[in-house]
Length: 128
Image 1 (cartoon, helix red, strand yellow):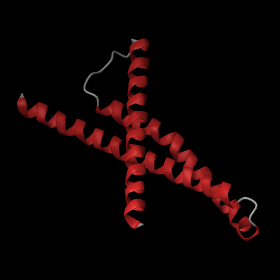
Image 2 (spheres, one colour):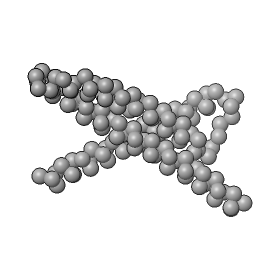
Image 3 (tube, one colour):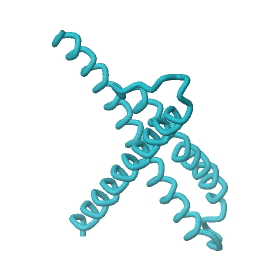
C-alpha cells in the first residue's frame, strides 16, 4: 500500500509542477504584455517610432491572449493533480472545485508575477 501512495504522490507532484510552470509562463506573459503596452503608450506621437507601433500592437495581442488563457489551462492541470475527487452527478460540487482550482491558478500566477517584479526591481537596482 505505501508503494501505491508513493506512486500517486509522484503523479500528483508532476501535475502540480507542470501547473506551476504554466502559471510562471502566464506571469511572464502578463509582464511582457505590460511592457509592450507601456512602450506603445510611450512611443505614441513620436515620429521616429511610429513605424514600430503596429508590430508592437500585434505582439501585445499575442501576450494578452496568453495572459488570459494560460490561467485556465493551469487550473485544468491543478484539477488533474488534486487527490480529492467529486462525484460527477454533483454539479454544484464540481463547479465549486473548478472555481477553487481557477482561484489557485490565478493566485499562483499573481505570486509568480510579484516574484518577477521583485526580481526585475532588484536587477535594476543592482545595475545602477
